[in-house]
Image (cartoon, rainbow, N blue to C red; front, side, top):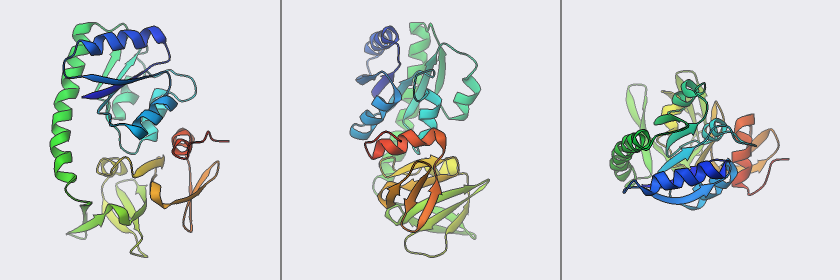
Length: 235
């Protein structure tokens, strides 16, 4: 598994590197001092697993997770127990509280590896196509990734806005479960209620993103990740 370690404390990063080196199926591809460095790594390299600190300057670990429409497997490693519930609500695989014993670290890694194998099997099937199906009016409706402009979450439903139709496709599912089916390089979450196609972006402002004739709000916790796509810091 290709992994990265993110922590603003150099000693913590060094310890993580040592622990990772002892797990035979892990390959450390980058050590990052903050979430912005990690964004660049994720943009340019394949990453299967993230070891992530929470309390970091600029963008916290939890904000970093919220900004990703689709994320690798994540293990949080932090000095604070109080963020555990929020972390698991963001689908992290494990939550480790510093100092972490090697035995506990390996247990978390084994859990991540099992999940990675399951995901790899599913990804191999998905990679053979450029589409997926959703339930619409008791039928399965085919959605092509390149046809998607943006997606809106409405409680237990989502609206999928397409280039090929003036009416959105409405299906009963959560936006969280839908984002797991999207290629992370092609889509980004900009708000708790919106996921957009990166290719459809025509302009970005401080609090808005424009997709052709549509203007959508950008949530505070997602703004840095959006501007990182453009290679800029937000104003």
